[in-house]
Image 1: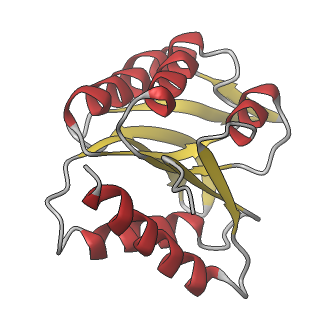
Image 2: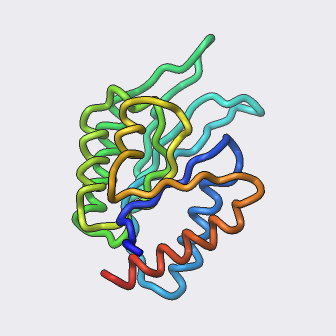
Length: 177
């Protein structure tokens, strides 16, 4: 079987996509020296209310708010994608053995530098492991349609098996490097 260079998890909100991804990364890091590049997106709460999303560089821990809640929607801060986000990916291309993208969705549709960096990473020899929102948009659909990219649907029923699959995939792509 031809091993694909890039692997993304998708599925409903709160099903455990990021948990499966980071659990597998943590487990494989015990047997492989891992240098991570890329980013993760965290939710920012005020009490119980979701107020913002923040992007964090997994290498430098630099972070920036990418969107803030407003009545009826979200204000998107494109500069955060095009600086912290794009820089985290490009640094990963040049110095990591695994790039994490947790997660890609719709807020970054107009973040040109960020989207360019994502495509550069997917074209690079460094494996990419990430999470894709279920949204239907040109950016996510372009990623889904790539020959070198596999997308796995995560459900409550299969999430333990998905974690094992990600672990196996990581062991294979990292042993090839």
